[in-house]
Image (cartoon, rainbow, N blue to C red; front, side):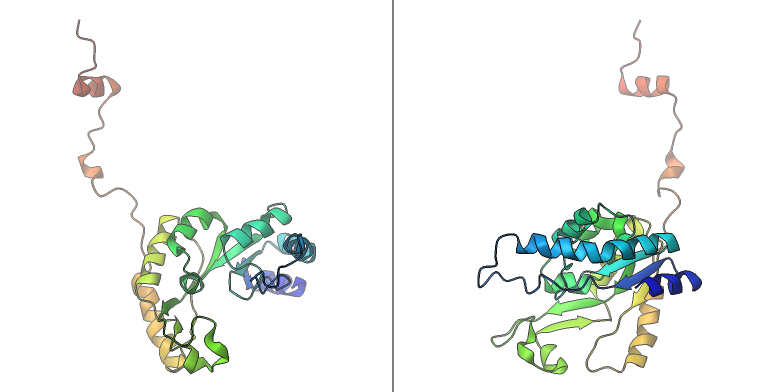
Length: 234
């Protein structure tokens, strides 16, 4: 990871995508986990990442954790726990991928509202949850095609990523919108060609002023008091 920090700097990149690693997962507490196990896991995770974060800071590069089931950092609560453990290190940031939040039944738009200051990378990838009577998001050890019969992490976005683009524009996200293709059927070259067009068409050019600025009166404070009827009536 320290070599990756140097490589990112030499490539002129300011954000590096990665995973947190897994010490505490699986998270289901059965058999009951010993008291303090999660705290110990995050303490150990932080001790491993702290020198890496410092190295990334010296390189001027943000590390962007893709919050992903199977990793210790997989949602807002786990990210906050880690952030606390590394003293809110400025280089500890987030790769926002709405597909993983859809499959966790997490409000991915509210997530952006809460964590936008830490989002430094963006995967344009949607997901669709299609439950059936045999398997759910964990896939039952099925193959990739069979798993996608129940939970589908798509690269081509529908409503999920469209709304994500609006949220990213709202908070003036300055990074790349990166296509991530994981469809088990369509060829990745076709996905890349179609996805590039999708991203181009959905990046929002933020307006420089409100649409009704032309109607602004530029009234003085005295004039505003007059309009409100609160001025001096003597």
